[in-house]
Length: 94
Length: 94
Length: 94
Length: 94
Image (cartoon, rainbow over all chains, first blue to last red; front, side, top):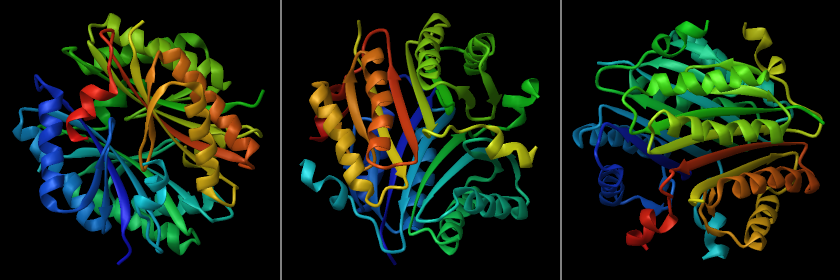
């Protein structure tokens, strides 16, 4: 199965501190073991699409468990049957 | 299970006509039976999050079957344990 | 100058009611006289890019004047030297 | 004037190589002198909102000058009267 890239930005509402909730979502991604890059507006993950969408789904519940009564998320998918990697896009800028 | 809103914009690359591919994705959503609204930049669906993310995933393969060698998608999720409906947001503007 | 499409979703933080703030932003767009379509996750405008980006900018201050201490916005631009219209995309779905 | 964050992803159509066009847009941002972070799905800039939206606008024309007949862009704005910085969001993850 070809790998793809999925970026996730969560915007929780009803929580005092947005960063504490975002940190918990990043922790979920870190613990999942998928390759990822944390950016200022989104975290980009690399892996199989189903696996990454499952993380997107679990991120919603993490926000709720942090006190959010509503979560707006922006998810970007970069998909190709040939595979898409983070490195092919940013390696030269590191 | 509370309903949520998921908006999907697909941007296929490598296909001659972007609208023909987008039409096929909208057809997928229509046939799924989920409530939805077609907009100029995205189609918004209402339903259970897992079901809607499954449609997002299948939309990738539809674009590939239409000839795309790569697909960029923008997905927005509006999620709440209490539920989020399309009508609460746009009914007064119709 | 060719027209383009710009979609705007504002997500204010720190306001009691998200919809009241969004309504004020939609009011700004309505009063501007640009062609637009209100959707469940974003409002799409049609016009000259500079003019539409100016509305995007003013929308930030409207959210702040409604009590937001922070505003997250998602803006999508569909741009072509030949012009891009809302009708070419959704007329057949109306 | 408080600084804000603006992320830009450009998706040009009609160009052979998407990365060459994206590189030109990143070059525009680099030459502008604004603080920025290049990510796998978007480049995040920090500065005054008008200045950053002007760069977003100029990026469209750069894509066209690279051969694009259409450009889809995703722009995210993180705005606060108190200011928003890239460092407050990602410093601890570097």
